[in-house]
Image 1: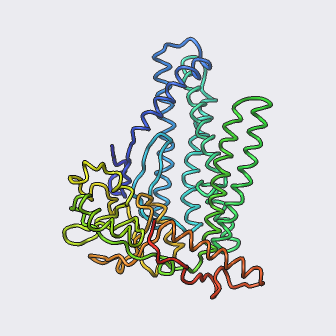
Image 2: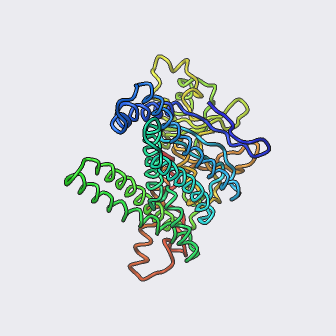
Image 3: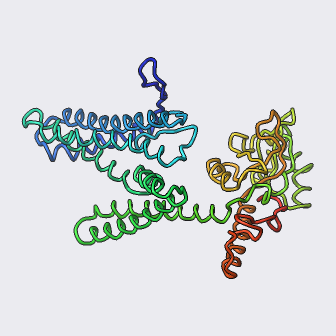
Amino acid sequence: MTADHTPRGTVRTPVSVRPGAAVAIALLTFLLSAFILPAAVPDRPTAAYLSAGLIGAGVVFGVLLAADFARAAAARRAGAEVSGITVGAFGSRLTTVTQITEPVAAARVARAGLLVGGLGGGALVVLGWLAPGGAAALAGSVGLWAGGLLLLLTASELLPTPRTGGGRLLAAAVYRRTGSRERADAAVARAAVIVGWTLIASGLAVTFLTSPAGLWVALLGWIALGAGRLEQSRLRTNRLLAGVRVGEVMGPAPESVAGWRTVAAAVDEVVAPAVVASGRTVFTVVDFDGALAGVVFLRDLDAVPLDDRGLTRVSKVSVPMAGVCLTTPDELLTDLLPRLAGRPGAGLALAVDDIGGARPQPVGAVGHMEITKALAVASSRAAVAGAHGGAGGPGAGGPGTVGRVPGAARPVD
């Protein structure tokens, strides 16, 4: 379900509501009405508990949604195109078409959401605390609970990890001082690892000494630790592959099969000979006009039952072009990797001659095998350069150069 919650004359921000949002609201309503509110304000009708629980869950999701509207406004001021807000089981999530890579702009977007969430939670706690007794006691309890939960969520968002608002604020601070995006990202990754280990140790200590609630703290620390280590791995990869272009590591262009042909015909005429000749396991799929329609893997063709191969079209088991990442031989490999991770369906990127043309033709492919080889060669050359006191970067031919990767002409797995 999609709705536009924007005043007339302003830029619209579409809101999509997933079924998980209803499940989450129902769960929060149940916890409030069945356990939290009866313990805080006893001897009230069941209908009152249910109504108050539903209002409390709605207020929490409403403030989270308002925080994302604030992020959307800040993102537009930073020049990003906002595609919409998705409300799901874990609250709302802002989606942008253009990624905000400038640390200071990303920090402004994060700060806008944190302010709304923090102020909303704080206001609810204050109103709940000041609420009089009697008939208003139930409303005060709802305000205290909803505000406390929002403050807790805001506090977790302030943790300095690569995907949180706190991490973006830290990155902006380091970037202002050093002017280096790499140093800013490294500082966030290092902080995430330190905070992660600290939370894990604290959570386990609380669990063994006082309450099992410490497991939640340990879990939060485990997530922060994983995010920090993943970011450190990404930074190491970018350092090793700095300056390497797709054309230096890509394998040959996959052979084409017609999407309208049956699996049996495609296997007999194209796939089987290619597998025998070169061990190829991935093929491009073309439509009637010869334009790219997707890619198909040998494993998916083999998964079609023998009795159905004479009736099943190749297009039915292929990955459409919407799930395939396109690149050019001149693109930096470090620029391709994030886009490739965003489209994991195909597991590879097709290098084409003209990415903006009406009918681009594949000239190569980059998959896990090519990237692994590039990293192995870059690591080896960096180790050799370090052993000999070289300072030319990971490549022997200068900063960031790996040269042609041995064996890169082999097909993509």
